[in-house]
Image (cartoon, rainbow over all chains, first blue to last red; front, side, top):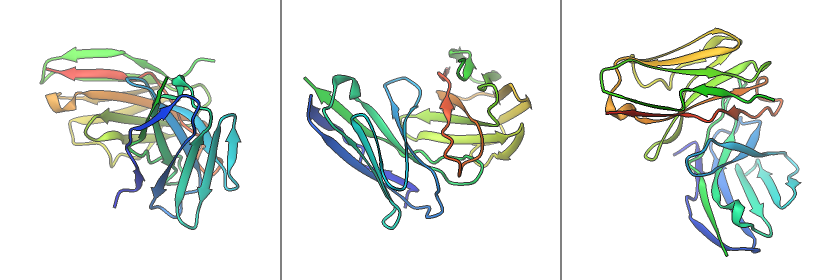
Length: 110
Length: 116
């Protein structure tokens, strides 16, 4: 079983629509969780940290379910600029080591 | 603020040659990470340092790969001899402190390496 599993997509989303996707992680000791986005041929960039109670950052909402070991990301009012690959990233140890998922591709269409 | 700085941005060389990739982490960051990304294998962690000390190098593919961090502001990843299968994008990332304080990693622009 992979440490982090994500639906690769692509999720084709009309502009203005809402899209949501999950990832599951296997390391129950993970303490920190992040969503990164990666544009084609660019470096991964932090989108948001994920907190236990769930958190929102503008049009983005992240949820964490420790019991089921999954993290979700919801994007409201999708913009063309949201087209990217979204990487689910739990921490794996106390040194800051992160485990990157393979990513979920989102394509927002006009 | 300056981000993580990597050099070179692109490198094309013939197999068998030595390749050296360089990274300058964000000032004040204690942890530094080297990753490799390919279409087939995604983003793989090669090695990481904390306070200039290698913590985990289990991701280094083989003895041809070596990494050093002589001081807090500089790290190198060396491949000798290089092989075509080493072709990938190599990223360096740094973070302020250990996890459990919710510290994300900040990535450099990457080095696109092509071994012919």
